[in-house]
Length: 518
Image (cartoon, rainbow, N blue to C red; front, side, top):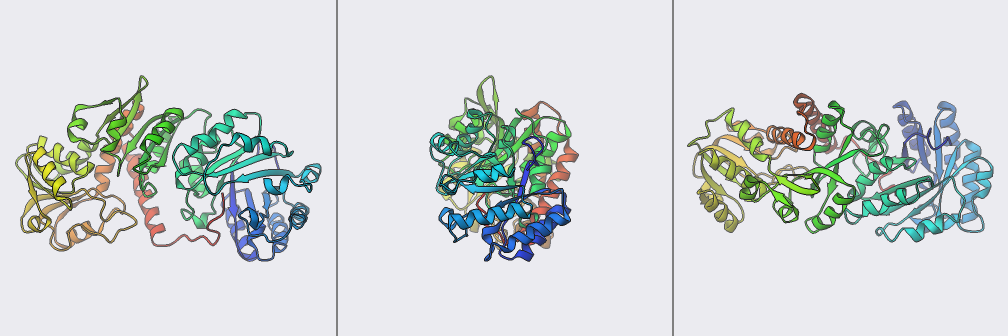
């Protein structure tokens, strides 16, 4: 294995149950330019078959690096042999051309320690995995350092946002020790990217044919092109979006491309934060530190209690979608107003127009206060009558039951609920006739929702949620960076991300090796 500085920064984890499939996927990755691959021999019913695959692959791609792993089932692998059998296989993998091996600490600390592999100039990665959570890690590092190795890999399971911090802290605590650090699950995804900014040796990715199928694991192309892990600086500005769910969000694609277009050394990451984890998230935000972040469902209202300052409009709305830090204080605003007003004004004179808002959450409140300020006549409907009445009263509007709303007619209908959002794209707020000439759906994943498709069939003018997303996102970019937003770049990035999401939704990517531990 090459030195720490010359080793490729992304290792593709390949776990397949047939040697032919293993070689096929390894070749596919090599043809796309990847040169560092992990072969999970334990995934093969006959692990010895993987030895020929290693030799055949390296004969085709002699400049590639293969890391061999044969994890025992006692340690969440699939190999049922003894530790002696495990080391025999790993030795044979080195004979076949593997430049290094990954040995779990449970095997590495036995009398059959892998020191002899180090003597053979093979790299030895000693690894620790925790599939339950993220425990106190200092004792684990102390235990691992007793075993000589080329590098040490610590993989935990993130149950809350701050677990990312606990894992990444090891890089600062042991700056001279080569480490591979990450937290599994979607909650732990930020650790996969930020570990590289903290000096870790490399990070892991899924094979390209498995993009988006393993929680927290993405393909190398995403890590390289979207998050620039090959070129990441040691102290990038970190931005992000908090949501639950967050996987559908195209904000990382749009904002990262915008940062790159403006040559700003920063990263924009997705943070999965459940409704009960906001306090824990701010612990992460303070210590990373985060420079700013977007806020979406379900946090737009609850986030206010954690902020030091909220601008007057956002305070009246009772919802915040943009948070940034200034002079050590967390500040909040709501950029949805521009995202709502600008698309509608292109098609409608807002003053005295009649508009029905479907919903009563943060986005609906943003629409109601924005449009009330423009002089529109508002009606509010939704599935929570008490909240509908409260919002209607706050903006001097009319509260309607859904059954009442569909018997009326409005200049425009605004849909501000999550219904129809990916992955539940078949859902639709209105089951039959949509009671408006213009239909504006705030949902942007997918780009054409079931509601918009029905509206088009009924001859309505439609406004996709992407228009709102881009307007409010451009304003967020200005707030975060102080730079003018590259609008054309952001739009192209959004359209590409939505197209890719459609491909994934239609099942164009499948992963036989789903569930690879890291």
